[in-house]
Image (cartoon, rainbow, N blue to C red; front, side, top):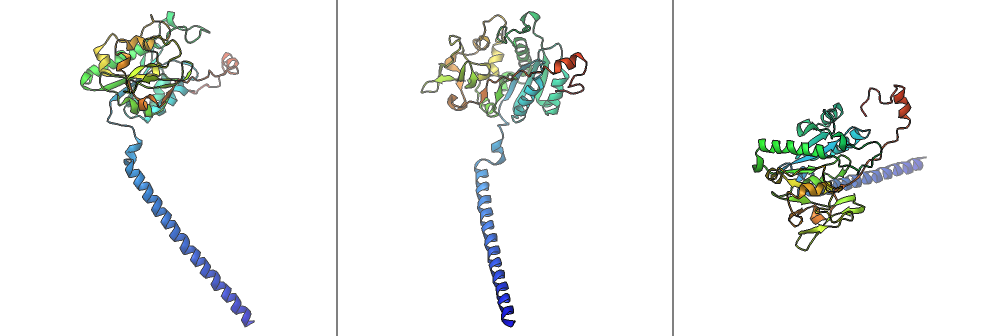
Length: 320
């Protein structure tokens, strides 16, 4: 009996010793990992400039992002996506221009809810009836956004003149509401020099995976790899360039027109401002794609049509 008790006691103490050893080992290992991990994280964080490394340059030039928009089922969805990118880009001022007789509550509500009221302006300019697409017209049949972009350019020029004009360097970009933008793109725009038009690649446009400027060994723009109507003076997409504000002030005639061929809107404004060889290549010497020419599929609303006729819309009382 005493021998059995001594054996059990011996086993009990052995277990305690093993548990104590495991506990000490565990604590020392965790402390080492935490210390090394924290040290590593701190050194990486410090090397990257701390939290500021994750923010865009707030001291850069103001970027006036001009967005023509019009009422349609996907309008709020498109503008919501853009608003999230702009919120991450503190030096962007959003110029929204609606194709309408007056500003809509939908756009006003979106700006308020996104916290961009102080960094935006809501304008409107209605496209003349003879230039409006009708019924099943393909979207390329008539020029789009002409009235709205010109309205925005007038507003920007007045704003610049009232706030320092040429002394205050700014950038103007045409930011369509159906494209997809990386927030990095606005950091690249901040590098645009005075009297320059910055250029970069655009993905999924013109029948190509990417449409881009072609550079020589000295980094000078020689032309573009455009496959669609490459004979254009500036065969690039609206999303692929931004303009130093002093160029727009010095050339008030630079604007868009209803009287140009399909695909020539970009060339119409740029011909007043620069030549191809003087454009400033950005986005890592035009090797990074930071914007894509995407389009939202029109939603199928067949089940909604009878509800509308019956006065029982599914979105009654809602803003979709």
